[in-house]
Amino acid sequence: MSRISDTLLPKLRARILQRELQLPDLDNITSVDSELGRTALRIMADPEFTASMKVYVITQNLLSIFIGIVSQYRDFLAFNKEYTRQENIYMPQGPPMSPLTRSYFTYRFLADYRLDDEPVETLCSLFIKICNHFDLNIDRRILDAVRFAGDSSMGVYSVEKGRDTLMSLSDVVTGDTFECHCPSGYKGCVNDVLLVRVVPDVYDRNTPSTMVITPYVIINYPKNAWIDFFKRQGITKTDEDFLTRYHRLCKYGNAKLDWNEYIMDAYVNHSQSYIVLTGMPDIRGTKPHEMN
Image (cartoon, rainbow, N blue to C red; front, side, top):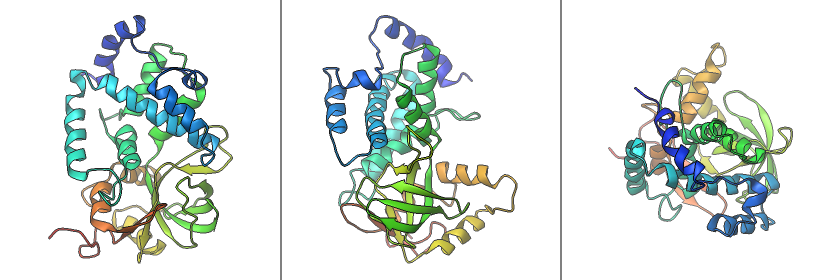
């Protein structure tokens, strides 16, 4: 069976040669008289965002335009059908409409939806492949943002230290600790357990990472409860390939873990800067909205 990129690239060639498809670099985006250009200007002027987060927000908007281009082709019938199905089920507008936020939902389809398997191909990897194949002059920061987003997954973290919107997080499985910005304004309380998508800084991997979605704060089920959950999924640090299996579970889920369903079932409350969940994905009766 042909991979989606193999069938799509020839169809895009004519549009690129005729300049019907242009993917500008970051510096030129802000000077383009277009919806993306106007959006980019607003983002670049926003003092609440770090420089790296501005790149991610602009990149997310660019990728949304990219989806609009490629989804017109028959190769994307399955993608379009699944996107529409999930949008109708989950209505991802954020609370009070839905506990699934638009940014959460968008990243799930950009970074995690598998267009092809073995090796996995996503919209992020397809974007990079198209840029490389046609040698498009895309700004390095945008390409890095797409690559980092594509490599990212949802994850469960414990707050080790909070101060303003920069906090110290610890991965509940690996124990790795790192600094992280939270653009939503959530300040973090020690021992809070967060479900969130984290990406590295596009300018310097040694500077704090960024949460690119509004964090989900999980109450009543502390760090150790989540360590036990991942152990029940067969993921322990003593296994040689635990990092690979841990990443795949966080990114794609399994029969006992669907992040969309978990968030819907576990929703409790929300504030402007975070959303509150409770319960464990694999233990029935722990989530307030789960169906019998």
